Amino acid sequence: MRRVIGLLLVAAGLGVAIFQMQIAPASQKTPATQPDSVVNQASNEPLALSILDTLPVKGRAPKTGYSRDHFGDGWNKVGQCDMRNIILHRDLKNVVVSGDCKVMSGSLEDPYTGNTIVFTRGEQTSDDVQIDHIVALSNAWQTGAQQLTLPMRIAMANDPLELVAVDGVTNQKKGDSDAATWLPPNKAFRCQYVARQIAVKSKYMLWVTQAERDAMRRVLGECPNQQLPAPTLGVGNN
Image 1: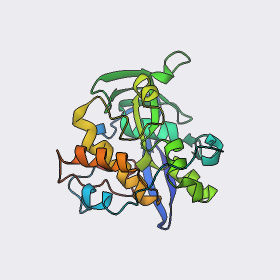
Image 2: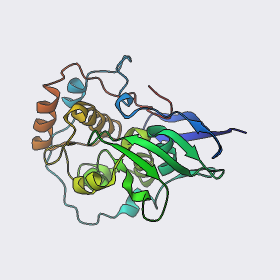
Image 3: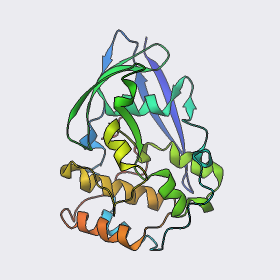
């Protein structure tokens, strides 16, 4: 029996957006969205460059007082499913899911490195694939998120637009870097990566530093027709 899970995501100033996903028992396998399809090229979304030009440019605020808890206590849950497993299900292929909504195995075409990672849930292996916040939360804290309400920060930290399954080691190397100090080693993904950062910063009213803006413009100079992803990027969006 397939279980239908409604994903309720609160977008700042945009109301409520509802997504649906199909979760199969462990005996079944279901296809997942490919990492290179996270940007909706066929949509009517605006160009990333045009939205970048609307973002305020300021220096980073002090990191004083930053805590992960300011963005909620871990992953939000929808029924039995937490956002980690929801994003794993979205981004991995050949997914096997347990009866309690945990992704047990699958394969990831890692957007950050371009490598294929075979994922198996386990104490020693689960961290091989991690869920990255496209805009690092500490970066968000220093570029406007301090001024958001707690519910808005929690919404951001659990927004599928802000989340992507990636190689764990590479995610650790990224840390809290912005586009001026870190870009995915996989150059083919950089345009989509920067567009996602711009979309998140626009959606949650964050700013960019001058160096960050310049780095984003350099990347998008190679793909001036790069569109923003849809603001309601969810499970099954192509």
